[in-house]
Length: 158
Image (cartoon, rainbow, N blue to C red):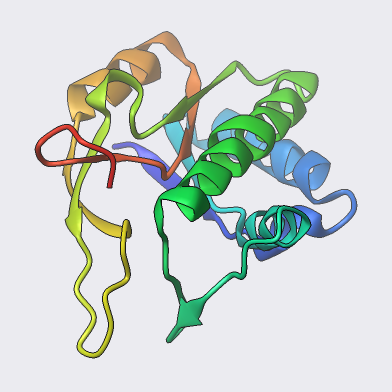
């Protein structure tokens, strides 16, 4: 059995959070021996970069409306800065970790998320996960750190 840990974007801005998370994950891994996967967000950092770039963040019922410009910002933040910060913290804690986005290896495939009143744009719901890809790293004792940036079912950006 593989344990999945989800990190919300709000926690990422708390000083010392990543170091404490890595310490706790290290203890969990040592205690249970279970393979781990970490999936993360990074919403506050996305909104901050959008603001610096003059892009107005839009949320409907807590969901980010994502046009192509906003998707580019989300990719930079989630698959770049945030993902690598988590990997760095895990490595510093003695954990073997590697960062991916859902695009890498076609790891995550999504379909467009439907909302009853508005088009959310390039927002998706995961419909397929390459579990064989993740199991490979689990067998090696490597913790995948996954950014939620993903592909559509047809392989296009979503």
